[in-house]
Length: 161
Image (cartoon, rainbow, N blue to C red; front, top):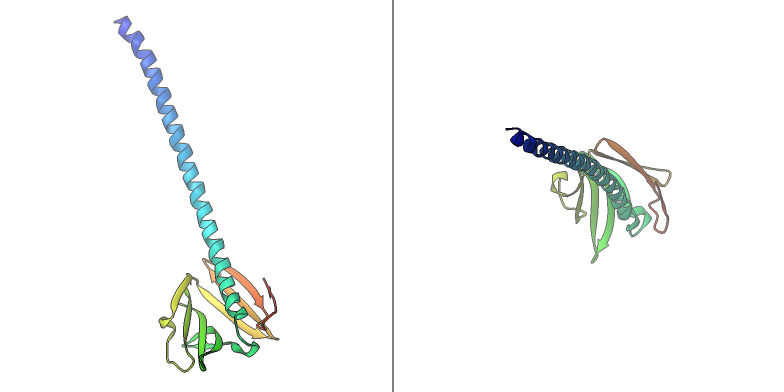
């Protein structure tokens, strides 16, 4: 009987050590998964904010002439409108925020479209645009964070952030 008890003690000790090791490994894995999740969310947010602002800046820089970039109303939302000629016909690219998305619509200048007809680009709560003193002020709100950019819509000029 004492012999069985002596054999049970090392077995029990080994089992407890193995259990402690398993719990430790599980704890480290869960902590690592939490850190990874937070880093991924932070990187996604940074990517979206940079991408959204750089997209607007690219549209302004691609404008064929200084007067081609305008800010105006498009179906009740404020939109950036970049006008260009393609094969002798006027076309407009509109960038705006609608229904929680940064959107773009490229169409003939005289075509009748609504904001819901555009292409979804990125999630965004709002896009504020203002033209004053020859500059374009852009404020994009994504995931409760505001990102601002000041652009000079003349070709060959730079952008400030």
